[in-house]
Image (spheres, helix red, strand yellow):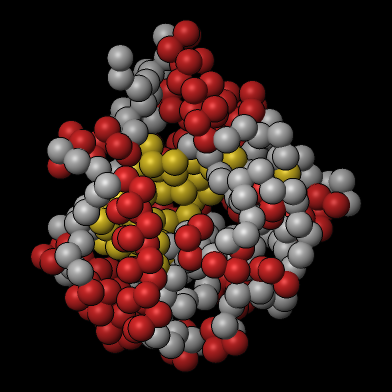
Length: 343
Ligand code: SF4
């Protein structure tokens, strides 16, 4: 029996006949929201890893999945000094050899683990359009030239793209096939976005999403559930934005509190709680049932490494979470999109 939602793997298999694996690349970007913040912290839940792939965090390689929490900020300080500032013109220094090394390490690690040679380049860390267009072209051209890719995915912020950057990104469809932009929506409620210190509002996300789609670029929206102040009404606002945009894919994350974030300071003061397994399962089901069945679900939970995760400490690993989610949906007879009409 198939899954009660459209998973990334099943979508890949039906479209290409095989899975395409993403190779995370940290090209040295920073993020306008971090640059704007006085203390450089940006969104209050963002740590200085900026979503780097696990196999790129070499300084943390001694930690295991079941490691104890380590409250060590030094471990997290990885933003190179040249990437600290607030003018995108001078922020990105392209280190080609480092990028080649990352691609080799990523393809070797994933290739060995999954016995595959189908890869997409994934610019994942921080805001990967935060540089002038000429510099972005130099970087993207180089990445595309390193090997044969079956996709190019660029993660960024809705306030960090414009017409010329979108024209450039769309041009890689010729060499990479699928080209996709990932944008952080996080919440459809402006008050929550303010509290997250996202530095943009829902209107900005809607405008950026429209522009991405008009350029024929694939679109994935990131959503964060369980933030303080989010109840069903606020979650429904997020669902409403997803339905208005109708992206190709979404990534859903449960709130995690990581060391070295401003949210962690609030957590220590007792101001923040994070969703447990049951609450996150219910939140995810609430979302899945109300969004169209053709939206690909690329992620369903956050996977902060255990040694950096202050809360929730008792959340199960991904396989257990997925089993719980899927069995609950099947038992109740729910599938993605079954309540989508009429929203
Ligand atoms: S936009 Fe992303 S990289 Fe920038 S501060 Fe927020 S979470 Fe961090």
